[in-house]
Image (cartoon, rainbow, N blue to C red; front, top):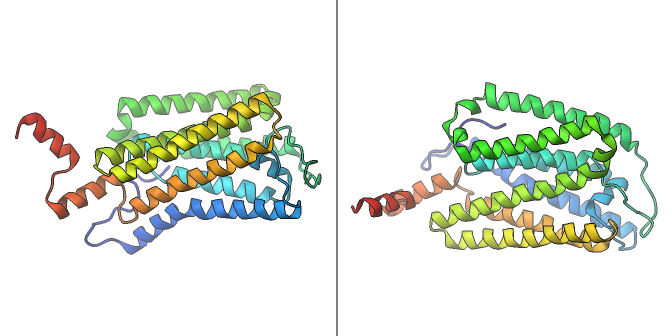
Length: 312
């Protein structure tokens, strides 16, 4: 869903294009601003409710936060899709997670109880909204995939023919196909389960991307960055498991879930901030490594491995 060229702006390290650079930086910073946007809206609503928290951030879909909640997830979804990451694998996983963010936005959680707080419910015809909105998401996603693979030329890019990337894409398409099948076959199940399944799977994809960044940073001798990514991924794994266990064993209105989700979203923001700061002046980690090798005269990690193997 993004150009064939490498992630971020295609820059000559010596003479960067300021327009491409600034556009890329805006794309990098946008999810952090949107997270603040959503957090501010939820905080304001909690103030109206006397500091009371609902059982999940998703429950605020049914409050005056509604428009901010939906808009925030859609913008974050678009940012995940537009950003290619550092490899074809990252690009595929980010696209998948971005698509799921739209489903999280369009399909509200079921069983949300607003009575512990204000008890006021913003009225929405969720049945009609889900039918209309999710159908629109599917059609737009299909058009985007055709554009990405045929018009932009992803199918001609050798990086996307790597077995790992092909298998990852196939698994993603299988999950999406199952979602589409359930939507048209059994909307009752879809309405009851799509939100939670999409949210959990979206975060699983993000965690995979974080771990990929940790490996990439480690291989490029950036041990500090690698440690930051590993710790962030570990925290998100623990939090995600906690959410699944709590919601499976108790009411969806357990306020512990709300606070865990707050930290989970903050952890995503931490990862995005770390990666943004690390690659602020580079289109991707590969370019960072090349520039550093040129400046220091030292071989890249890949060149070093080749020399060790060849005995040079």
